[in-house]
Every structure is written in C-alpha cells, then in structure tokens.
Image 1 (cartoon, one colour):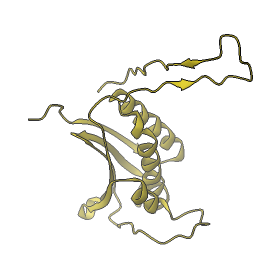
Image 2 (cartoon, one colour):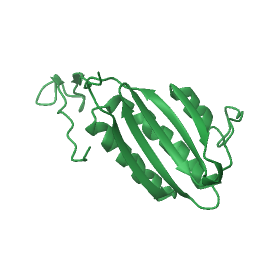
Image 3 (cartoon, one colour):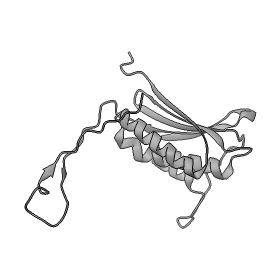
Image 4 (cartoon, helix red, strand yellow):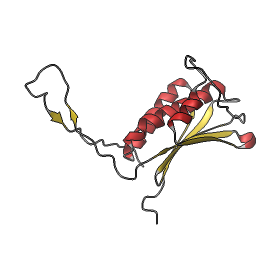
Length: 167
C-alpha cells in the first residue's frame, strides 16, 4: 500500500546563469513545502551543477527541463536538454576549477546516471534518500553576542518553516 503518493515539480527554462539561481530557490522552496529540509543543500548543489553543464555544453540551445520527484523514500532530480551528446565522468585533480560537476554529483548522491533520448537529447539525473516523516527541528543555542544576560541568552526553538508553494 502506498501511504504517500508521489510528488512532482517541473521547471522549464533556458539555462542561463541568472535562471540557475532562480531554479535553486524554486527547488529549495518546494523541498521545504514537502518538509524535506535536510535535502535542500544537496539537491540545490546537484541541480546547479547539472544546469551549469547545460549552460556550458548543450547544443543547439540551452533550453532544458528540471524535474524533481519524491516517490516513497527517494527524491530524484533530473535535467533534460536537447543535446544528444552524453556527458562523461572525467578525472579532475583537486586544484581544478572546472570539470568536477559529475564527480561531485556522484559523491553526494545515492545514485546518478544519464538516459539518452536519441535525437531528442538526454536526461541526467541523481537521487537522494528521503525520510518519509517530517524533520524534527532541533533546539539550538542563541548566539547573538558576548552578553551573558538579557533577552539573547539561553536556548531558542526555531519557528516552523511555512511555504506558500503549491504542491
């Protein structure tokens, strides 16, 4: 029995640097809405790497589609572009300033891959394990300055995150 149905979000865009930041914010907001806050950093980093690859390498255009899908306990992020050439996982040394995007995705994700779609292009994807329960927000120490008295001492509990993004 499926207790929680799949959740899906799609964004179509031209992979330009200004749009990449917008997509990161959309992905972050959607994951907050789904209460998957622990996945935000990895998902945003991965989608940034994939969109940067589209921007730098895809031909004939920079149009692409970003999909995020939560199915049971797995979040899958994919980017589809119109370039049929498949990327390769190269070897970049530790001082390289480029060419490490897919290696970074391989290191931070549970799994990743490339799906060719013939002359229509390709899909590059990665998946992250997702918790099926909402994330508990831990208490954190309030560090506002060097004072040991007054309203900025002790432990504070963060407010719950609320989002107006439709799911």
